[in-house]
Amino acid sequence: MLLLKLFFSFIQVGLFSVGGGYAAIPLIQEQIVNIHHLMTMEEFSDLITVAEMTPGPISINSSTFVGMRIAGIGGVLLCSLGCIIPSFVICFILAYFYYKYRTVGGVQTVLSALRPAVVALITSAGTSILMLALFQTDIFSASLKDIRFVELGIFLVALFLLRKFKTNAITIILGSGVVGTLIYMLLGMV
Image 1: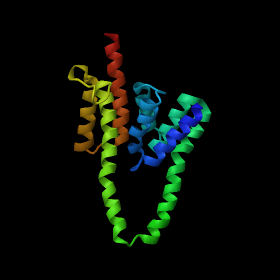
Image 2: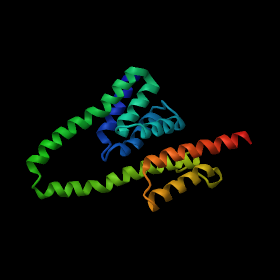
Image 3: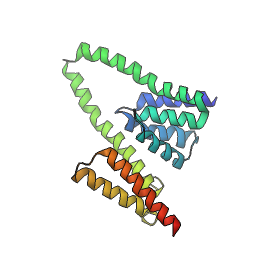
Image 4: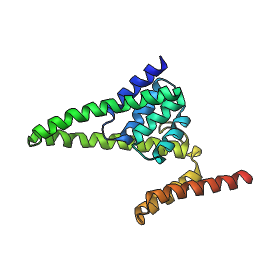
């Protein structure tokens, strides 16, 4: 029963995550954390962090990690397939119709209308991850007294380096991990 629940949850994620992997994160969170209560928000955040750092599409990595955490190898297979099947079928169908009707003006209108929804999904995912990193809670439960200053400092420095100096994202990720580890090691010794 658990495997079927996971499979159908990730079918929904694969079906409605328009805009790529980052758009899938809030959908996975809704299914796994909020609806089925199979993971806590902190566990989910840790898995998303690992999924972002590993090579490959974030939605497939997330589904693989969630499947392994909840149901082992069977969960990996069913979550990954559930995430892939809708995208494969939809892409196949859309590619057929796009190449057949790409010169029709209405097709471009529909694609233009989808862009704001994609931006909203990606913004939602980014906001969820940021709030969890800085407050260890969601946006509606956050208060300034709960802010995590080490994480805020690392975030601001990383954002500055990315925007001002166009620093390589891999360097930022590795540097943030090293700096965060060193800071917490030093704070743990005090």
